[in-house]
Image (tube, rainbow, N blue to C red; front, side, top):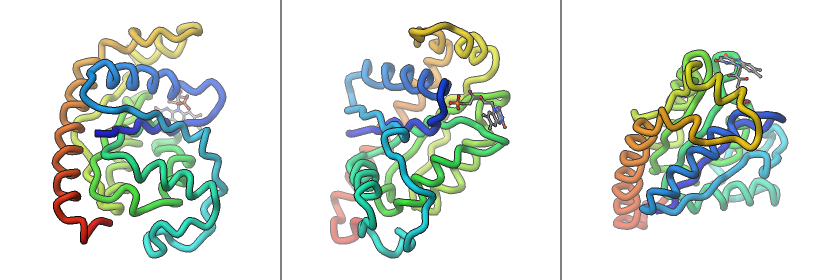
Length: 197
Ligand SMILES: Cc1cc2nc3c(=O)[nH]c(=O)nc-3n(C[C@H](O)[C@H](O)[C@H](O)COP(=O)(O)O)c2cc1C
């Protein structure tokens, strides 16, 4: 199974990079999945201004949109690592999702967030949005609350990912569940290629 970890913040000094380092390290250490980091900084896209991808299905209007679409397409499941900005998730994440559609369909997604309430408000919004792409949003999530977040935010470079290890049991639950759904949905997609999105 190929699991992509999507880093949903792009601003300088982002905590998201630290959270993602920890997630990738944990998933790779399991040895039961292939892990790919997708940093949205590597996918600079204009604000979406094209025909709806839900209707045009993999007809990419620009090389940048194609590169993002083909990247998302190859995964069997996702961990979206999301900041919370003004009680929502990041605009860069929404913009990336609006440039694509079918590439995500019938695949599971789990979430990691941080902030005053562990990114819970952003994650709840993301769960609503991904249902429109017919994804399977998972219950298990990692919420980095201030007790763990503040020391991890303030720690100097290079970041020591063990600062987030108090949340390791939550990440293990998330990864176990994500892998189960990724396998189940891949089996179902492969069994019915005629309806492959
Ligand atoms: C524009 C903006 C809005 C924010 N709004 C919230 C918020 O609604 N809730 C929250 O818990 N933290 C909020 N914060 C603080 C972020 O949790 C904190 O800056 C975090 O590091 C953001 O993730 P990032 O560093 O990966 O961008 C906000 C930060 C920014 C820059």
